[in-house]
Image: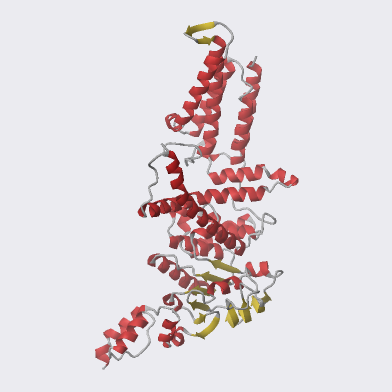
Length: 282
Length: 265
């Protein structure tokens, strides 16, 4: 269980290697992710999040340092092996839908990897069931909502039975309901299969669900820790341009107003739980 | 008018023709286009017409719907008919009206050409009406398979076709949005003289192109990440299923060709 599934070692990447005056998109970044973890990579626009995603799947190669995944060092040779073991979901639901219908899209990665037809049929059904989209087999993309399209994209990634799922801002273009759908799907998936998930996001509410958060700022790792640890810094995150989850902001504001809230609360439920028992505890 | 047009539209259904293999349908249409030119007298043209209606009947597409949807084609049909009537000379003079003279041969040719045109349009429309675009693409990919030998990028062509089909509704939506956005800024599209209207399309097209390129880039990334490396070593999710009815249909067409050949003069 405790094997390292993805690691960055002193990774530096710049889009303009000739121009030293421009700050690298990612600088001296090191971290490692164990199998079975849910990691959230958060940061403001321009903090290097998306570049990290591209480094993870070999769309970009670092100028210095080493990216390794599934015990293989990322290189032109190992690239396709690594890709076949990781799924990725991007930001725009429309622009990653390749197939003409839901089932075609889910099968796309399987076709690319030469999976035999009988096996494909089974896997398409199975992965659509995992994201609760099995009734939509023959639907065309323009008849689906954003959240549904993202769930199909997740199913498309799952069909390959990857060891790692990377969500690159997968919820940022969705309405609140679609976002809930997708997050809920990921949560259930993790419960069911224990899949390793890396979600790259600027939504701290989503990040709060992860096991560990890596906060990025200006291409460097700013902080790393459990959501509790990271959110404790409170205002520091706000200065990085990140919005704290509503419950946390509320807690801070209540404290400022002189209400002695005890814990740090990540979700509304927890906060409500403390508040309604507030007087009886005293 | 656009809603009624049935060019390239697919009407889902469960008829004999709907269930046919797309490869069989495409072959059928191409063969049919060839044998239309076998007919050369009244009897063979009538047979051709009867055969076409038989196919329409098998497809369970209502004749009224078909005729209604092909209205613009009929204007063209009448136009060619008129051309033949007025300009083909030969045979007996049927009647003359001022400088207009109608000859027997002209009338005959006019009718024949119209029938030829009509059956071609009907049969090809039946193909697109009963086959989903993606199935047509699949069919074409398989049928063009042999041309891979001469380095024709068959798989790439088919993928391009299916992706374009997939993105038509997306881009239509986008056009609608841009149109509204431009209208909200006070741009006046769809009125004024032609030159002005053409100019008004430019602020519509440029954002559409920009976003299409952006989409293409995103899509390429998404495809690469999902392991797309061209047609080599790829398996197919969609399987085509050639059945008895497909062989039968083609045999029927061959038989029909023989009959036409027998009766032609």
